[in-house]
Image 1: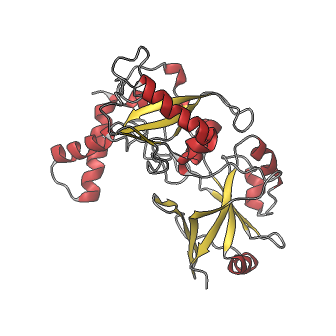
Image 2: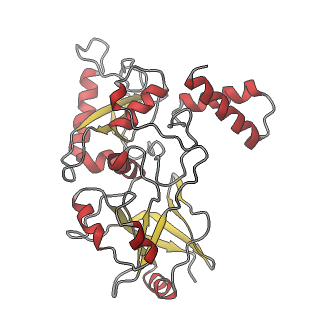
Image 3: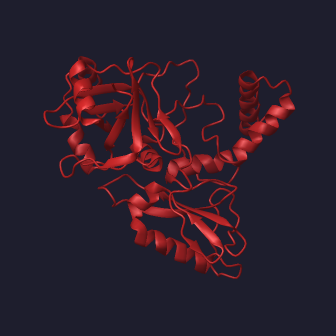
Length: 334
């Protein structure tokens, strides 16, 4: 039995356990629909990634919707962040020109390899793929990733993420572009690290670092955070943006989860975070916190475990386009 069929059966059995469905055939049909909609993004033999850091969901398709003639073009926040609205509009113009049935160089869906006819499609998704290691923010080589609405929603991909998704759908790939094989069964994931600091005169800082390295490397981490809607943050050159759509929810037990309006909860720890009283007092005063995140290993593990609160190692990451963050409101503090 091939990898794809094994994945389908494994996912179907898991769905039966969680939903109470008694028919394997019905569960297979349910899971197959999810696969066709792009809701499963990992290898057939891998456990589902933990929420938050490892694999971003398809981005919210309502981010940007320029309509030309009868077609709406969905473009995710991260695509706009990297390209800017002018280049996004150029993408739309390119689609209008080369998405015609008689175009000499038609646009093709990256998730089914079939041409996209913009004269017949109500919705077309325009994402991008990052092709090489980040040299400096905004300088990497990118290519448009066109998809039919039924094939998958717009997002920012690393090239290995896109290659893995194409292989999962049975499309031709260059195997050299796949990420390294992972065998996570039976291995306990390393818990994610977090650091709380309260700089004087500033909203308190909350830094969250993955315990495990991203499967697709730093470029995959960058692609996922942009798809999530988090901006690159270079603390040496700029102040964190205040993003109204992002919030941190708390109650008397501590901080509960991070949420983005629309997609919902983005990250939830196994148990509430419990910052110290100085941090909570600053958060209560400012009614917000500065949230930061960077790839696994950005700050050495011994330093994180020592709890020194020294985040100086993050400064170079902003210049490399690998630190993300924003000022978020905190709800629930009393």
